[in-house]
Image (cartoon, rainbow, N blue to C red; front, side):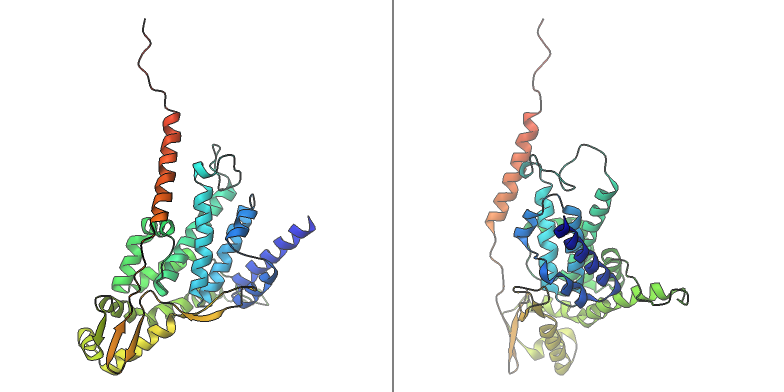
Length: 318
């Protein structure tokens, strides 16, 4: 009991640091708490704690510009949630993710809201750092937020991006020491300050989306030609290209403490510049047929289970 109480205390402290905007301290608190796919399976019955932990850890990584780690954390939990709610893979299971015949409880409603927030945060991370994710999560994300994400990437709509942030991030708490002298708008100002961190990141990369759309069409391209397409000077274009390389370089967790990591640059679209030429690397991901078959096998198993409960037969003969 005391061991579990210690874990809950650490997770609550991490959550507090996250809401105060101290993301480094939040992750440092979890140095002795192991996160990963295998530990998700060992935490059966603790789904409320899992969702809270992974959501706030993902937010910390996202606010620290460690987008690859944030995407990994969000995808691990969302994939676990998808599998836990599949009837064919969850016979005899229990917990808030398991299908329930009773009414929805307050905790279930809160967890579903938190999962929706995770999808919004995942969309923000993929806008700022495009990368390949699990096909089932990608499909769910397209169903939920596909039109909004496409609009942001094509038009650079800052208002729509801000809406995603507001719907995904938690309500931050101002670290005020004297609440008697607190100003009426200080809480809103602190929330806007945290949102502003990612809005600046988006503004800095706004031109990158247009540049990417051109680079995807070529394997090599002169800098002058791309500059003519974009109607800008060569030196300005080079600044945008360097910005892209810099923004796609993240600290990525390898092992140990959540704060540990090494610098990696693994963009969805990679390129290098040699003199006046841009050479675009072939980063097309090979199709993963295994995921396709697994998803369809699960669908057919669900259909089979449904058909077994259907009674077929005409009216009784007299």
